[in-house]
Length: 316
Ligand code: HEC
Ligand code: HEC
Image (cartoon, rainbow, N blue to C red; front, side):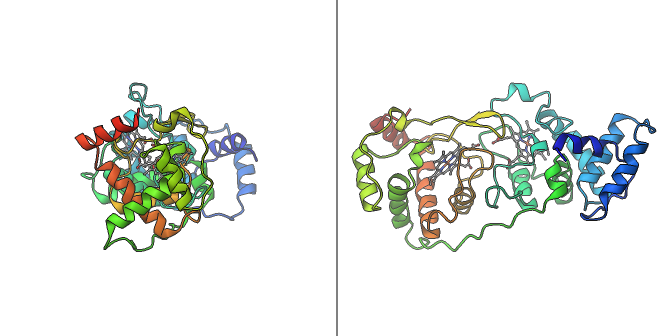
């Protein structure tokens, strides 16, 4: 069934038990409900709520009601009543609020293509997303935060059908006792092997990039694009938005700058954007090395050292 047909079915389906599991003979009931569809005439609001309860198939009604109450209080202004990111404040924001109906999240611990885990959404709700309008909701109690997670998931069909993904494992930091060596290795991996500068700016000279490539036994670039030292804005088809790969010396990172945050975001990638998953592509120790290096770059933010690095390379 195509998604819009499915949505149509769902919106005709009412008053079913909330705790639906998969594989419980949905089709005959849907058919019966479809046949009866149109006989009922309740308000739009109630019907949406029923649909959402159906989608959030393992959550109790109380939790969803609690989630909806908190959502209408705290989140609706940006994320919109339908969860589509079209709240009244959205048009004033440069970085647009997430459209929850897509069910795709940026800051996750899972592999690309897997559904975000509850703890990923909780972490974001609790800490906010730096450098965007998304506030930290850490003063909202834990139970309400969890109800919010259940409620926002209920906007998406994906969560009605699929299980959340497994968190990608994070190894212990092999550079813990020698972070400087980690950062030095990260610099070489960043420029020589992973070529992170295809989207983010490069932070070393062209000669140093070639040297790094040789050190990694990777192909040595003969020439470089003009935008080597700029942020190369990428179109996200998923979100239908232009998204900027940040200059680490200048932008606040959404997801935080602790090493563990960086490892998670580098290995999982950023869902729905050009930022790829590096898990399985790079060695775990190199994922950590990159995190040490990127963290060092983030520490240059708002410092004279950061200004002079950018000036010396012509980073725009
Ligand atoms: C002032 C506007 C604003 C309010 C209010 C707001 N958000 Fe957001 N939210 C945003 C923006 C902007 C983003 C997208 C940031 C980005 O794309 O990096 C976002 C993103 C998110 C995400 C997606 C995280 C990801 O990994 O993709 C979640 C989840 C979220 N918000 C939950 C909430 C919840 C729950 C509330 C209410 C308790 C809330 N937001 C209130 C602006 C807001
Ligand atoms: C194909 C393009 C592309 C490549 C290659 C790329 N990135 Fe990204 N990266 C992005 C985009 C786009 C974002 C911004 C996502 C956003 O803000 O929504 C991003 C964001 C990030 C973030 C910030 C996450 C946050 O919390 O705000 C980090 C850290 C990062 N990338 C590290 C790396 C590293 C390290 C490499 C190389 C191993 C790399 N990226 C390669 C496109 C790319």
